[in-house]
Length: 467
Image 1: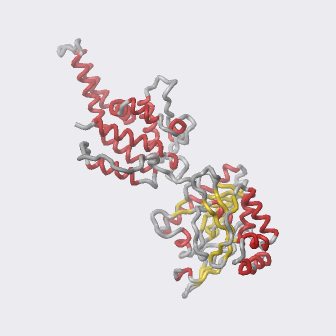
Image 2: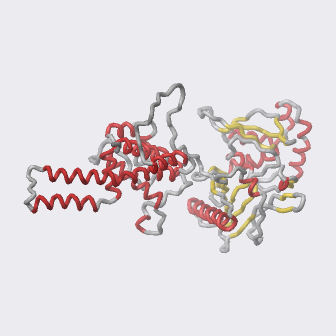
Image 3: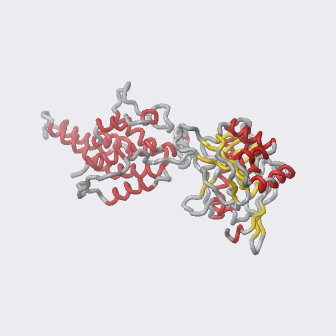
């Protein structure tokens, strides 16, 4: 145990509490039941705990093997996930948290965009946190810090953890109220219900406390608006922690993204030879970084797009030369004819005034083989993703049938629109219909197929532009 957590006098935060007498009676029976078998343990549980176990099972959680203790605290275990899922997680609940978890399952649900829970009317949202690129967990970092703040008369119960070290006693976490009184935000011990629903199967020592960010909103009235307000408050608090204290915490995404999911597994002997493809160092570096940015899907997509940008001047120039040569080779071309020469000049001017989106259309049209492009979209799971009802808004769907627009043009329009949604963060009405794609939102975590599309186009372009 670290010096900063040698002795922890745990607070009793959470959404539901067991009264002192009831909890004391539970803890007094732990030693008596520790060596008994599961049936004897269950028989000694008070009726309220039996009811709590039944309520958790009724919520869809399967009872797991019991009889385990951790640092003297008896644990009751449940299995998360159904039998159809390849991975079913075992979740341990401290005996003293059973009632709180059972009550919480009836009152709270998992949030959709970020990992966390919220109550039915959205007046309480609890966000899981993460620390990017750090070995220490959120709990271990937060427990080392202490903030000074004005105590609020908002009426919310806030009971902090207290940490005693050799030289001081202090309480990490905070509870802050908005000046207009419509919201409060709290950094405190994770609630039992959030710990149960958000568990990933890991077990920690009993002295470990994880922290979550909780936002309580009294307005507006609609659920969606309250959740939006909670999100705004959470974002603002995390920004200040980063800007003022250099504490880079972020909300934990609902699902982790597999940037290049579905890549072929390596195994057995693979034929290899000296590389026949020579590419510039800039392209190699960008292509490599795109694969490394597994935790940041928008960065991965933009890196592949930068590979395409590298070749855009080449493909645009190649297209312009093709058009000019076509005019010169026309049987009616006459160097003494002003009309003939003007056609050549017009072809040159058109090449100069081509927009980036049009250059991308040229690149996809000329560099990507149409049959391979169609094969790409016929892969498993891609049809729904690239459809009108796919998870990415504000970008063109890909229709293989029922349209006169070439697939290459549709692909270029989609890739360019997605690039704009990632790079543009402007308070401008013209971007209102296509807001920025945020790096930790549901859309970012759904970018896998689009990233693979950008990678495919990049590989086709590199192959096509070899001398």
